[in-house]
Amino acid sequence: MQYRILMFMSRVICCLPHSFLMSLGKGLGILYYKFIKKQRELALRQIRRSLQLSEEAAEKIIRAAFINMGRNFLEMLYMPHLSKENFQRYIEIENLDRLKAALAEGHGVVILTGHVGNWEWLSAAFTFSGLPVTAIAKPQPNEQYTRVLNELRGMVGVEIFSRGTSELLAAARALKKGKILGFLADQDAGPGGAFIDFFGRTAATPMGPAVFSKKFNSPVLPAFILRQPNGRHKVVIGEVLRYEDHGDSDRDLFLLTERMTRILERIIRENPTQWLWFQKRWNTPPDEKKERHHVIKSEGAEHE
Figure 1 (spheres, one colour):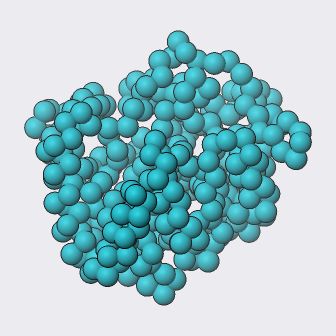
Figure 2 (cartoon, helix red, strand yellow; figure 1 turned 60 degrees about the vertical axis):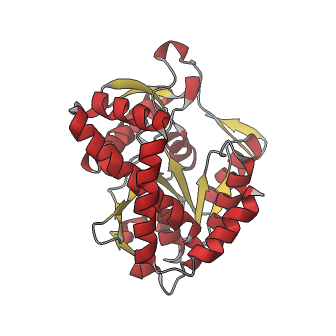
């Protein structure tokens, strides 16, 4: 039932002007901020601790972040409206040549990104630029919402892999075929993550981007999509990162993950109204750390 309702909403929303959608999204975000107390209070606690803000400053930023989230939700449903012919009305891409040059190396490209701006439109920007995009995504707690999300992503040409073993094998094959593989690397990674300082607190950090980069010799490109004051979006593509082999693979993976974490932290500091501050980012305490080598299984073999 939820699937049908959301897909019907998507069809209706695609008939509306984008400017009206943004006004509607602002109202939705304000309602969310006022009435979803648990997430609002978690966001306020986390931003005050992370950025050392006063209560008043934190409330102003978090209210704006909830407005961004309301707009994101409606723009997600608006994705079927996007096309190769019209996406540039809404999205500007800086330094696309960096991504094309990295793809030309023939080892695929690992995209480092996070829940910043409208991250769902980041992949759309690349697919409509003629690039092959895949991504690893965490399934939502609601199965029907996951189905809607993946169907909408498919409509803009994005291939999604979940976090199961068979899906990771498919993701590995995508990189071997020279495709883009995107990671939302700002989530709690559990005991198997790298425990790295993030806004002054130790956080379990996903090592997937570093592990895939090492295994397939793939360059890593930071890429983020930022909402602009005029309602458009700007995709910012950073300088290429590479796995550096110094003879200790665990430490080398950690160091690359740490470099990527610093980039994520900087982007969030510069755009605090555009990150999901109510994520349970610091959910795994350091004493739960699991010591193990990070591996990817490929074609029946296991590789560090």
